[in-house]
Image: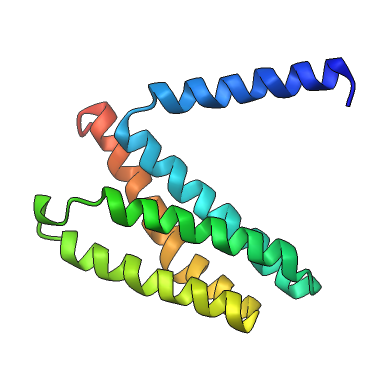
Length: 134
């Protein structure tokens, strides 16, 4: 790796670290969901291509994100908390099963039927929070 390439990568890593350090909790939540969507897309594509290693890496990263979402959820903070925790638990089981069965359709279903709609809902909530409901 050339020093110029290393320098660019180092700057990009610093930018990401600074973005994460200064992001609001709502923005961090949206970032987690965006990355979860990407992980599921990558897993689906890898499974369709027969690339088990990439699929496994993407699915385990997706599991890490769901675990973070579960750990950060304050279930008692609002009426929807227990339901959301149940969805996270179901999703975790589906991701593990997807990794075990190597089923691309299952990864796609998790993404399309659950994660993308939740990501959009959180994005809208974060936007409303930032704009004061305008």
